[in-house]
Length: 631
Ligand code: MSK
Image (cartoon, rainbow, N blue to C red; front, side, top):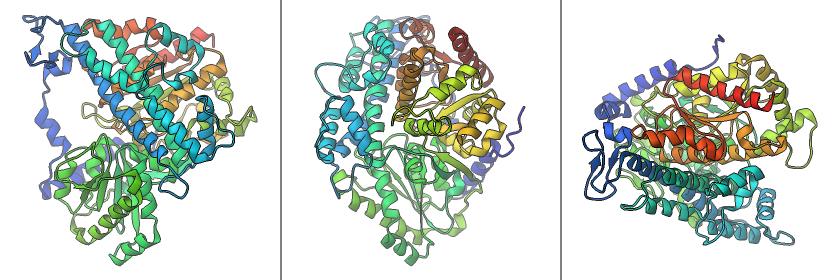
């Protein structure tokens, strides 16, 4: 067993949290830790997915004495419908994020707030979509691609354009199984229709639609969110930054950006670097302005600008509890409404910016693409002026800080591989050197570790402990979302962490110059993982379900994660969960998700709440795939 003695431990992070909660007590702050206690035990019907409140005859709860709801729906129909609604909520949120980015691309103009930073990628997407690029002004092309992308949400005919990126065998499976996603809004809308009172109660139909809706997110809305963000803000390349709460600065104006949509955070980062704003901060007695991130916004700005990452989902209250946060600026998704009352216990400004995420006790500065510059400047100014109100007696910033290298887009990974093998085939590169390492057994496979924190799991433990075990066994880990943040906080995104890996992985990291855990971005960027898996399968000449790669969301909590799980499994990647998706109440639904769907798509879910057995099952799955390939 390796020591991993360079890492920051969960115990150290917990000790820092305890110290911060003491400050919270002094000022009368509430905390998620307390609210978990208040909410425990959770409702058994809700946990099992066996409560139906879709119509007003109920709510109906299924028990041995009452095996059917008033309409006659059995437990399998109820659990299946709840699962599909869970998926639809996630797909709607992710894909609406993608739509917002497509809209920003549509408004991009020369010299404007938003410009095209990666014209090559724009042309590549245009080429894939059959849009003429020759002799076109880059902004005319951007508008045409953006409009075509926006049409993917509501087009009356056909399936998602990006499906063509998958290996042909996979596309055939999607067609044959009736899960090739059509317009994104249509899949979400149909999911709500199917689950309306008096429509579907057949588990198979509900799970099939869950897959189709998930796929419309992963190979539709999320993929557009990722690709158009790259066009607008640049395709990520490896860049050094820092992680954990110690990135907050005692003598500076701290602005924390939180949420998902980089259209906002990019502008805040830009204005925080404006000499006029820095001078203003100095006038107010600060040494400068420090922007840092929480949740997926942290990933977005870290991988494009090297902005430090303060933490993940369950650390969002901690940044306010430091007493050194002048403003926490949010857009959409994964934002605790608790930040409103909590910020009132300190001098912190809680600034909401989107009509989609309005919350009490916040300052609402509505953010529009057309006035993005002015909006961002107003936000930065508000934070600076608030420095005067900081109570230095309450300030405590834990001395926890790690080194991280982030920004491994698919393009960047291929470039790293090209650099060591001279295997360069075209400007897009190849995954062949990686495949050779897997075939030779130097690497046993890969795990895509994703998803949130959930108080049901001791925060970050599963992410970090699973990663360590996998790395010791020569399994490379790619990460996104709050799992990436967990890795960052612990120090697993540091190239030095390679020293603790198995011999094979250690050699690969040294040769290629990468950390053993590769940061691929935010939760929409799981689409990058799909593209990588598709490219590996194509370069190898096999289908995705044969590649020794699995997905894992050990601490997931959001509807988006359910949507993601569906599209990852439907893409042919076995997916391991550490939290049950409210399906325990139905043997039929569980039987399908954790077994039957294997016959449809060549992969299934594995749910196991025990850390060690979850890890063993993942490693066994990779070995089975290797054996099936004869390697
Ligand atoms: S932010 S969806 S808690 S990964 Fe994307 Fe983190 Fe999960 Fe939100």
